[in-house]
Length: 404
Picture 1 (tube, rainbow, N blue to C red):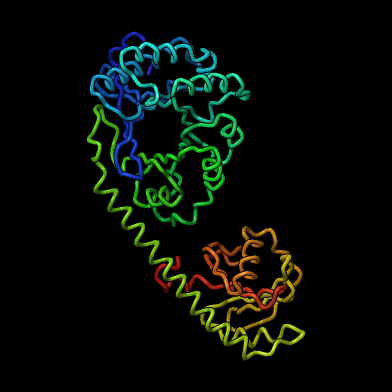
Picture 2 (cartoon, helix red, strand yellow):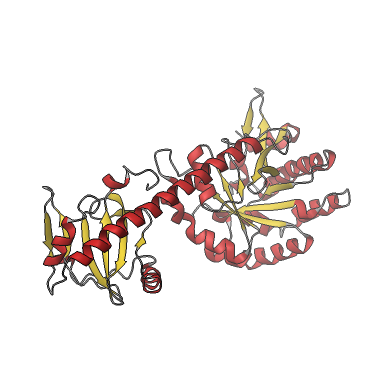
């Protein structure tokens, strides 16, 4: 589509409203304004591309932006909609204009009853200028007016420094990378850095692109306070009922909670079962100076373990690996000796927990590098300085509901 066709016929610009649902009450809290254009064939063309296309003159993009924002704000005032409107701007264009077009528009409608604390200015991290000083200055002024800032992340952990400087009220992340054949809880760490930063700066996480049950589950597990996506509701030319998604979302949340409760119960039952077996086996097995005693220990837990090894309190492996081979026989693999596992996430936290609580710990689900399969590890304190680790295979976990 030729951008000139749009400029000549601005009346054909159509604002669509993409609902944003808040998790706490499962109600529509606001809308993201999306621009469409009704072409000569009476087909509606989405214009996302136009606002980030730097080959189009700034004046033209500013005019189109202002026109679509104006129509959306007028509808908000006319319909007495009390929620938020999210208005998008290319950050570099915003800086070039010093924010004047946007600020003047807000002031004009403030006089007509617009509450500026219901306006969210959204930008993409990919469009942020390298030097954010000027942008930061304008944003600080907007915040004094009550305007909130939202930053959409293209790279989950690529713009954390800029986020820390700009202090947005909302951080928007995409769930579209998560496919239906993936387990949502395995990918919580994708946005771990973003989640931690959002808590520190007081920003809310908004997950967009939710097109499936699993993507919604991922957003819920990842601490999402706000949700967008066709799985819940589509963008529309009008505002929808505040509770349009409430019944479905409430039911989904109930299912998520039920599953997490079942998973927690299954993990506690596994802990009790493994602890009972291992405690009994350790009391019946005499520890020797070499690692041969581990072979005898392994024979007693071969139904749910494929590897055993011992580490000291600084993460250094002080035993060989005891592993099952292809025929199911236990063997000592000396090359495991002296490997350092202190780099593993939560290693020292778990060591401290075992020292204080005097009991074993079951790990999260993770992928074993050598086997390329999902496993869990049970760690148990032999003393204040030695800890024994039991790797539990996927074949055992899959038979137990709630362990995957």
